[in-house]
Image (cartoon, rainbow, N blue to C red; front, side):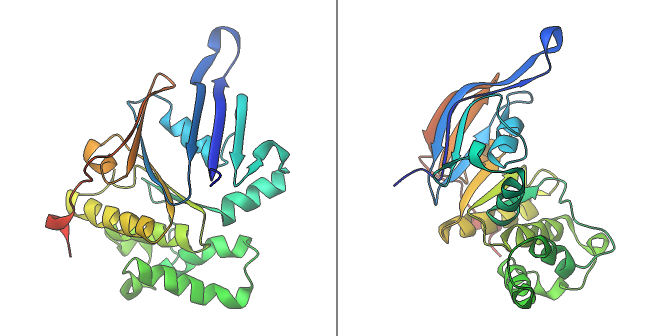
Length: 238
């Protein structure tokens, strides 16, 4: 089966001359549909830059990126924006929810910029909210939510367009341990249901929820291994 994501000899360079910084150096990797991949590394290792490239938030300086069988250099800017909204879902450490706006309206937001018929929006949003056990907070504003509830709302928003890939960037970074594990339980369940997940984290325990761990150091892949034994969530079960 062809890879869902394939990058070949990708480098990312910021600046020029004396200010030039090489964030990624000659990286090649493949990610297949249904994988759960964690990307780890210390600050400055290039993991956020890699996420931005894979998530169509930034472009490569050198090398190629093939997504769903097509080189992204062949896409127009409008097509890139459409793929980013409809085929990719993002969950960030800072939640990035709109204030003074209900959970429902936050989850509806990606649909407003999609090709999904408007008559389907409400049903899709409700389904996504129910999938993260947040229906009882449907009309709540973010300021009234706990950290864990905010992240679950963000996950629902990421799911609403049924994306090919879910990118989770330090999704437990602002949460206490129990809320963090509830969020990871949801992400693992989504992967079990067939979603491809790419997780950025600096926490070993969080990374071990994945099935594969890629470690970056100084912009290169230091290791790429399968997880022998995934982290247990039993003591955090609801």
